[in-house]
Length: 239
Image (cartoon, rainbow, N blue to C red; front, side, top):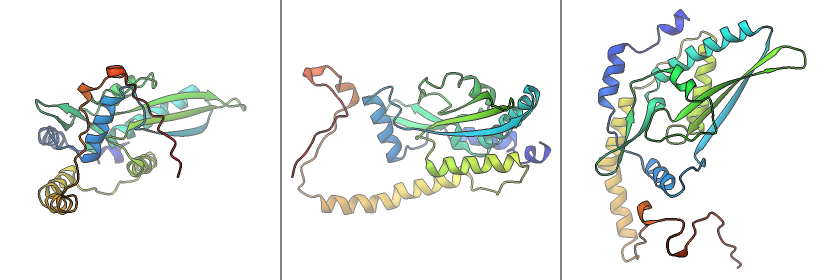
């Protein structure tokens, strides 16, 4: 693993990351997901998953060695991509996105022993990994790596990139240099300050005179208030 080890961020870089990324502005989609979570606590609608299978191990010892290598590669990805250590932080008013300074695969795997459990959005990590060993008909062992992530930090594109980098690390290949997370934040801040103002001005003009629809706050709703039951059944409409 010496080739891969050289690609890890330094301790100073990780500390700087931790200090800079504590109260980040949420994206509109992240805000929407938190709102939906408060309406339907316990929902797994925003969970993404992937399963990798590795075949033909002749002994438990070889599986142990291979799994150790996988865990090492996962830690490199966590250190490389700050967003994988992200979670939601409660503020006096509203919420923010924060980055944990920890890159502890032991804790990540330990918290994944029961993947039926829900993610706590206010604690790292918002993804989990678990390993499952199965004996094949030929008497050899098969190792399954199961990855589950919350859509707050994962989407289809990033999950594909995650699996691609994991494969490259396992093959001992050097990963391409990526832009820092700070560059993304700078771009997002620029959008919020400039582009969003233009967009708001446009839509305010287009929607002038349209009656507002106010969404209720999560705290004002309950499944039994005023005899109303919240559900996802929808309605049949004929035309």
